[in-house]
Amino acid sequence: MLSNLFFIITGIIGFITTFLIFTNYKSNRIMNLYIILLILIISLRFFLSGFTYFIFDPSFRNTYFKYSNLSLVVIPICYLYFKNLSENRKKINSKELLHFIFPVSFFLFIINRNHFYFDSERTGVILYGLFFIFAVVYVILCFRILKTKIWPRKGEIKVIQKQNKLINNWTLFLFSALVLTISRLFISIIIEIYFDESIKGHSYQWISAMIWLTILFKILISPEILYGYNVLHQKINENKNNSLVLNDIWKMTPDIELNNSQHLILKEKIDQNIINYIKEIESISLKFELFRNANLTITDLANSLQIPKSHISYLFKYHSTISFSEYKKVIRIHDAIKHIELNYLKNNTLDSLSKKVGFTSYNPFFTSFKEIAGVSPLEYYKMNRTEFEE
Picture: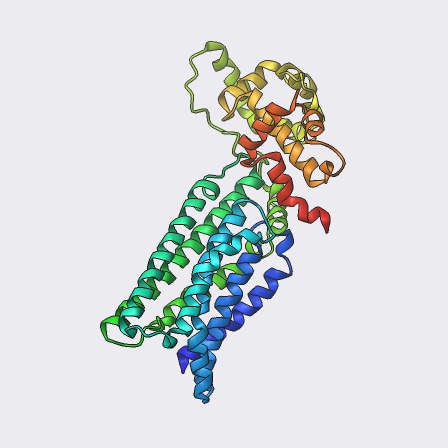
């Protein structure tokens, strides 16, 4: 009885999670219709599985157990969720329905197997052997798409870094849960075959319920996953005043030995002012106007800050992880992202944007954007387009 109540509670929490995701998924980079289907189907299965204990009509139980195999569609659904996530797509493509041919055919054969004159035990073993191959193939497909298209994504911009890290952790968590759930099912089937029981895969189902409940709580306690990019962006903005915005670029202690006598002299003059210099550089940089000049030099920056050029050069040589030339690209990509988020591309082209933020042409802008943000300018625009349309 306790396990059945556990199943019902898991199902109810799943329904609540489905509703919350559905109300926000269009503006949520992490969610799409496939994850909604995944959560809904699994939650419905657990709810009905627990409900069977309290229904004394045997026909209800028989009907549930007969049709419960349809939930096998969650395996290709999980793959399609990862695929659409990697491509930043929200809509379902009709060609993707081909992935459901095997699980639907498997389901139809299972519910009509009594109409065929086959050895019941041997047929069951063959069927579930085919299912094992099907499941393993899709686990491999999931792993490949995660390894090649989602997990390698990086970026130098703080918001992008946080978002990519969040997606990486979430997809790793969900993939691990999928593998554990399928493993539980296979072990259950093997045990049922060994003890000559009816092959249903329902043994130790409480383990799957615990795994699934963990996923649901992971979603519910993580507003960045549940509500998406806006919440993540807001959290990062709240912390901007607490530290340097471009904190990963700067280093307070040089990791290069100073052999130049002139640099040793500069060190004595600059050491006490390093943090102030960095704050001044960031302040003028993140106003963006100065860096929109395609011909900007380190001398121009020094003159604008009224700081000796030698001090700025020293700072980028010993206290920055990137050169001044690379720093200009980072600032300009920050500027481009700000324009994209303000819907600049609604009435302007990417080429226009590249020149507006300080690049001489689109090609170096495209290369720099993908290198720093981890995605192309167009991909980034698509990631945020649903927010503009609402």
